[in-house]
Image 1 (cartoon, helix red, strand yellow):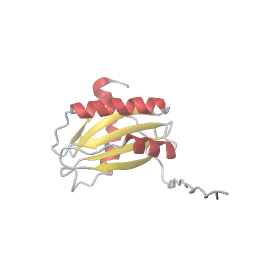
Image 2 (cartoon, rainbow, N blue to C red; image 1 turned 90 degrees about the vertical axis):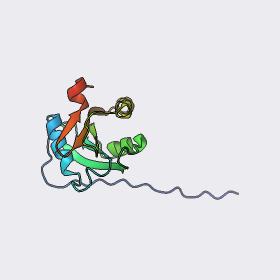
Image 3 (cartoon, rainbow, N blue to C red; image 1 turned 135 degrees about the vertical axis):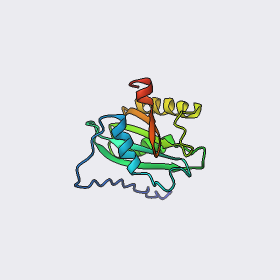
Image 4 (cartoon, rainbow, N blue to C red; image 1 turned 60 degrees about the horizontal axis):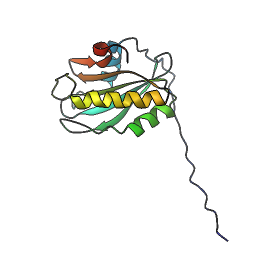
Length: 149
């Protein structure tokens, strides 16, 4: 007779602080919240990709650092991105990455990635509010450029 093995248990935890949650009301407030999460000593050194996780009222649940790459790119694992968003019950997300060169113009890859994440978010009843490209002195907003997704 075959012995059944016990399946591993998975535990998910998410802890919020007692401090008030910033509310995102514009791409500018998104930029300000996200810029605070960046190390100003490396923002011009290597590309990073982060996701801003929001509740239904667009209050910040948290910022998750997805990946760090080189001077001209980083890897974005959409399965990980959506897993994090779902685990903290986010209703809305804003994706963001920096361009170490400070050139805020989106690349073809940036545009394709935005479309891919938008499609995945739609399937999961998440709303992609924006994709920001940032540097120390400013930002580019897909929402401002193209309007609402």
